[in-house]
Structures are given as structure tokens and as C-alpha cells.
Length: 221
Picture 1 (cartoon, rainbow, N blue to C red):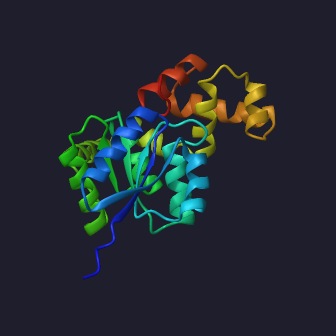
Picture 2 (cartoon, rainbow, N blue to C red):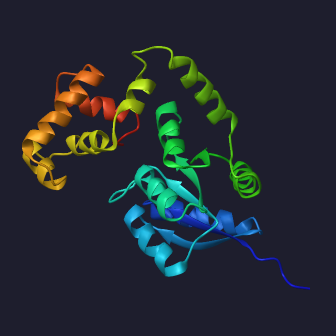
């Protein structure tokens, strides 16, 4: 009798000890096997070329080089059959909505118990999605907030990808000129991104932008 093929799982997380522990937990479930691990999104794109497509990816949101949002979007475009489960410390609706918009099929917190992780893997593999009580509750709350024109959820979803990219760079020690070089645009364009964010977020300073980014899970400290 032919042995059933295991479901292939990839891990993307820049915290090595956590990732190694997670790999051990996934392998212990029996039906699943870790295909490869990656330190960040950029490394992940290299690993998938080397090892092939996994069935499911457990993906950290905050990673250097290329974060979970960007990597999930990349997967959605280049490997649409790969299912992503977001792995995060954040339980706020902004992070959840951004990951689902990027293509994630599930969302689980890093402090979850192994049975919940297995339930998430089983659900995504069998049904194509995993909506926990946490996610359901946060999404219902955010939908209710959408009616408020000043809702942070609504405002965040109105930001385009370049504005979000600029916002991340604004949280570093780079000058606006250095950010312009990093994003391959003119300083005037950077001024446009900054002024647009000031207006949309009703913020007047760079410090305010940093506080907004931290509060809404766009960057971590």
C-alpha cells in the first residue's frame, strides 16, 4: 500500500529559535512536513525556486528585507496555489485586514497552542481558509467601524503601496533625500508622499507618522 504523501509546509520567520521550534511542532503533527525555512521574504523567494512550491506557508508579518505583506502579495501573483497563514504577535484588525488583502488564507498568533496551529493547517488545507474567533471578532469590529469616515481601519486601507513603503522608511534614521534614493524617486515625490500622509492621517510631524506606523502594526519596535 502506497504511503500517503505529507502536506508540504514552508516557514518564513526571522527569529531562528522560534522558527526551529515551530518546525518541530509542524513535523510532530504527522501529516505535515517542513519543506524549507526562510529568514525573510527575499530569502523565501530564493528558497521556493530551489525547493519548489509548498502547500502552505506559515509567514511572519514583520521581517527584514521583505515583510509578510509584500511576500504574500508576491506569492499571490507568482504562486497563487500556495496558501499563506499569517503568523504574528499582532491581534489588531489593521494587521489582519492587510494580510488578508495581501492574499493570506488564515491568521494565527505566535502564542497560540499547538492544537490551534494544527487546526489552522487542517482548515486551510481542507477548506482553503481558517477564520478563528479572533479573526472573526476583529473583522466584525472593523466592518462596523467602516461606517466612520475617520476610522483608522478605513484610512489605512486607503493608503497605496508606495505611501505605505514611504511610511516604513520614514520610521528609520534615513533622511528624506536618502528615502528618495532608496525608493528610486525624486525628493519632490517623497514630499508628495509625506504631505499626502499628513493630510490623510491628520498628522503634522514625522514623529507622528512613526507613532501611527507602530500603533497600526506597519512597523515593530
